[in-house]
Length: 113
Length: 116
Image 1: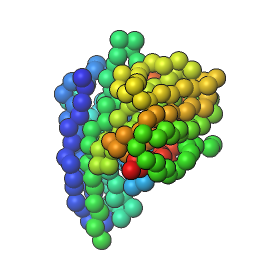
Image 2: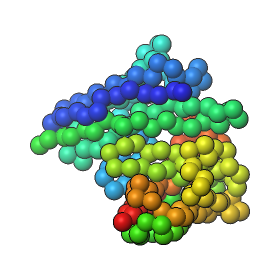
Image 3: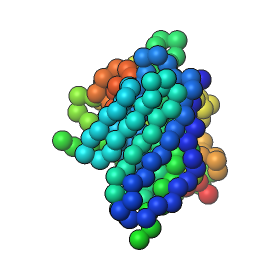
C-alpha cells in the first residue's frame, strides 16, 4: 500500500520560505505526487502536482529528486493566510487499476506574525 | 464554474437515528468520491463512483452506510443507524476523469455530523 510520511507540524513566520518534505518510498512508476491544502471547516484544495524534477505555479513549487522517493513543497514568502494543513498524496491502485489517494495526517503549518 | 455543493452543512442527531447527505458534483465530472474526516485526521475514502458505477467501496461500513449516484450526477450518502463514532465531517469530491494519476479532485465544503 503506497503511503507518505511528512512532519506532523511546522512553525514559520510571515515572509519566510517554507519547505515541507514528504517521503513516498513505494510510489508507483507511473504515479504523480499531489499536494492539497486544507483550511479549518473547508474541504481540501489542490495546490500542485508533479512527476519529476521541478514544477512551479502561482502558489508553490514542487521539487522531486530523480529517485522520486521524496518530494518537497516550497511556499515562498508565507503569510498568515497560509496557516493550514498540507497533505502530500500518492496513489494506490486496485485490481481494476483505479487510483485511490492515500491521505495521511498531513502537516499542520502555523504561520506567526 | 460552480463548485461541488453539499447539504446540509451541519447535522446533529442521536445515536441509532438515520441521516442522509447530498452532493452535487461539478458539471461534467465523471468521478465522485465520499470521504469521512474525523477531527485531526486526513480524509478516509468511503466510496468512489465513476459515472453511476461503484469502483471502490472497500472502506464503506456496509452494514450501516449506503450510497448511490443517480444518473451519474448527484449522490446521496446515508447512515442508518448512526453510532457515536460516526461523528465526523463528510466530504464529497469530484474529478473530471477516470481517476488516473493526474486526475485532480475538487472538494465541497463538507457536512459536519454530530451524533449524540
